[in-house]
Image (cartoon, rainbow, N blue to C red; front, side, top):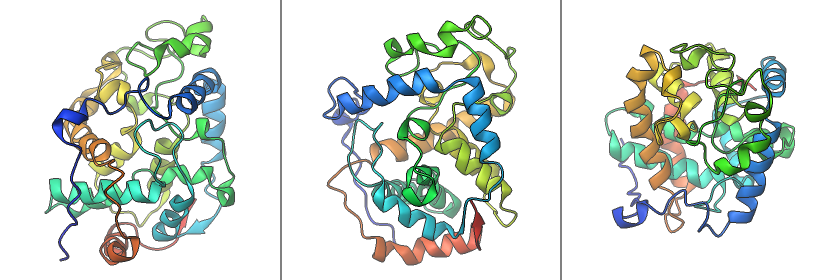
Length: 279
C-alpha cells in the first residue's frame, strides 16, 4: 500500500487562529454569506430542498468524476483558505491516513466528506454558496450563541418566528439529531446521496461524520446538547477526531498532486463506493 503523503498540520501555536472570522482576510465575504444563510435557511426552505434533491435524478457519475468538479469550487464561507476544494479534500484525506493508518474507510471519508459542495458547480445547478457551505444548524428552533457570527442571526426564523424561537422549537429534549431538520447544505446532500447508493459500503461512523462534520456549534462549541440521543453521544468522539483532520490540515503550503494520489483513492472508491452514483 502506498505511503501517505505527510501533511504537516498547522503548528499548535497557530491552531487557535483557525476559524477566526474577525481576523480573516476573507471576513467580508464570510460575513455576507452567513448573513444570508441565517436569514434564508428556514424550515420551509430546508424541507423543500431536501425533497427536491431526494429524487437523485440530476446526474449519474462516479465518485472520482464528482471529485474533479471540486477543482472549480472555492468555499466562500471558509476564513482559513482560498484553495480549490479538491485540494482541501486531499489534505483532509492524507491527514486522516496519518491519524488512522489501518482504517482505510477513514481515509476515504476525508476525501469525500465535502463532495456535496458540487451543487455549487455550474453543471450541477449552480446553487448559491449560502445554500451549500458553512456551518450547519437545526432549523425549527432557536439558534444558540454557539453558532458562528451569532450577531448575524437576528433575522433568522429561529429568532423571529414564535413557533420556532424557543429552545426546543418543534423538537423535544433528547429527540436525537436523526430527527432534526437541518439547514440545507453539502453535508445533508452527500449523506442522502450515499444512503441512496445501494453499493456503498462505508460504515455508520462515516455516514454520521458526513452528515454532521459541519455542525461546529455542537462538536466544537458544545451547543445543542439537549437535542442529543445516545447515538449522538457515542458518535461525538469520532466526529471530533475527524474534525481535527478536516480543520488543521488546511495549510495553503501543503499542495498535493491529484495525479499522484488518484490510484490510492480510486482503489478506495472501488472498494467502498463503486459504480455510477445517482446525484
